[in-house]
Length: 250
Image (cartoon, rainbow, N blue to C red; front, side, top):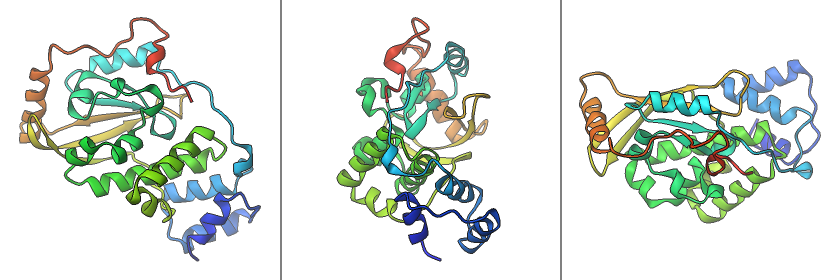
């Protein structure tokens, strides 16, 4: 069974196999947990691009901003739907990029990964990280195929990035729960950070990515050096509970 099955489902064709058939398909395709969840999303009643709609604004709770600031020594990103970057503490801005300098509609991790030359230069293992971003975005499409902003982002990336288009048509999905990133930082040199993801209860569309390095390691020393060089930078917390500039407007 080929990825044509995924393609037919993503085109909104009505395919309604029984649960036992779904499990058999999952085994035949050798899907992991993320792949099986994606398959169930595509078969579910929400599938179908004809009903694409705008989603409500995502906002980060003030308490989450406080949490980010309390983790000041560790880079932390908060991602929302379609890899929207909803918030980043000062260490995340120093390690990756200052997403708040981008127009709000362009603050997506996947968009930055493929369309920013700084991202390509930063990641030693850029192809691996970029493919993971594609697969995470496809997982998001399966969970909410009617979302207009996600469809627009995918269309833009397929048009502007040859690599994205090639990896997109493979129909692979990936749920990032933990892993590592190898970086070549312009200030502190090469380092490797490990990440763990946290999803706040009651807010499944929001994910915290916390990046760390082992105590005493060269990577930890590089993070500490980066922290000292950016100690005078601004914090993460909003000036008020609304903080509209940090919200995902689509």
